[in-house]
Length: 361
Ligand SMILES: [Zn+2]
Image (cartoon, rainbow, N blue to C red; front, side, top):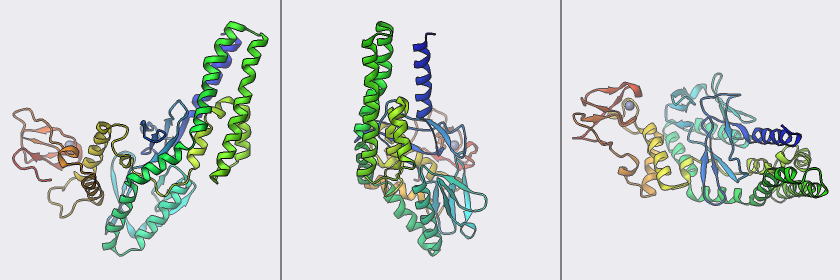
């Protein structure tokens, strides 16, 4: 390896490290300027420091964090959706919510990590308010919160706010492009010539401009970014920090509520959105005892109202699978087929089956 190649490899490694974040295992990142072009998810099989690693979109882009409902208020208990997909029932009497940085402590043994400190504070206040309510009011309070997190207008507003960082994204992309596509080949062709040093000299102009834009954005939008002058210095002097300046700003953007991933309706595509909607619906609705329950779980009710308001039919969000004879029943949760209707799906913890003849919903 020549010196130039080594330098480039080191820069690429530093850049990738800058793209690697630790976020809550169940977090979603909605990437896109006005419309979500893709969702980035962490590798939830790995757990580090209460979260999971995520590789941010490699091209600097505006992004908005989102989370499904991890806490669901029912009259007699609080339901906690754990990272491994299981649910835990917590007693209201034991719950004393406290926010500390990005962590929400619920009781002596249960903590939750949230995308940022403001979310943890907001959740602590919300759970405290739920706890103070009369038992019969808690479900309605959760449904109200769920409606706010599924607001299409709020999702559009948060994406638009993140989209305002477009200049930082554009300059970040130009810096990246200048390092990999211009300087690297220029060194091969021109060597240590004056023309090469001119090309290299453009880089500090770009990074200093990025540091200026970073500070100006923070000032105009009154964002709380810790150590912002040190960070601006890093952005001015180090190209990999400069290219990713947008992430610091997106992370600090204030928001009214931490949205549910389904709030970006039909994004990035209708098919992908429906697939996510079905997954969340099945997990919420079909639990052991669903057939005989007097009322659906609060999260299933919230989703059902949302689908109704968005004119999504039950065939769209809860389609019946195509059964192969002689199967006559299926598990509504995992869609495994069964030969007998009176069995329970043990894979899903004992969920009652649906049958061809009668499909109560
Ligand atoms: Zn199943």
